[in-house]
Image (cartoon, rainbow, N blue to C red):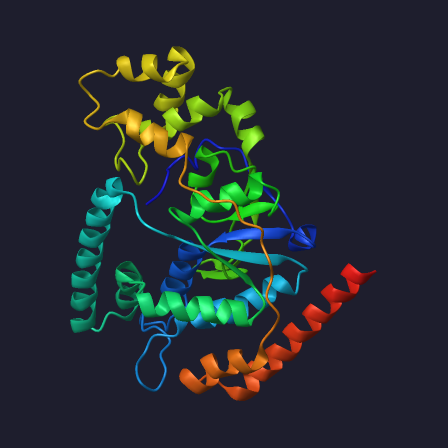
Length: 335
């Protein structure tokens, strides 16, 4: 769900080669959900091993991350910690949406509607504890840094960028902007090409810069948080009824200060805006000194080949590529 301000924030495309040498803090759950929902058969069936355990997320983490690392980037995957109690309503909405998607998938299955099956199967993806733990193990074995956030992963990503531990946040959501993340890169972990009815479309990464957002919208950091609350966040899903991004922007610019903004909406706000404001103003994050683990080829093969029946030949081929990437990185650092 996340923060819905995509229509009003400025962005620009960036080539992968422009990100060479940059450290990206990736919102792990956001990326893994992408892999689980997109890496599937045409009828919506996810990739699975011989024991029928889903492996779409492992495939995405291994192959797509190697593609990013080959561009000279370094990656930090940040995992969510404890959810704030106010996210309960958002989880309820998501669970209801998943149930509806599951019912529609069943209807498509009975009608042998392959396109419908592929469409609706993506709507009831679930990330289990086992998936999370094996994802962490695989990433670390690949030499990718893993951080366990105390709270929201995306807010921790923004903190890493502010602290100079990373160049940008990698996520499809916009929440990191509301907590002052300097840069947000979208479309980073997506497949670089997507098939559409009109042909193949190239997916380019896009950068959204915090200062440019504030300058373009003509607001300050507190007003951006208020704007986010008005349109709806994971902590107050739906926001204030009848107010979209453009109305919200006009209101925060007119009233300027948080108290005045929400006083103007007295009787229309059915949540404690001050609590939500505080979540973004003082996010639950920790300080980290990021260290990147060494590549562990044996561990990667144990997870992918030994546990989940990946092709040994294909995995070794990509491990050779990953080893060369690490070697080149070490040589650049030494130089």
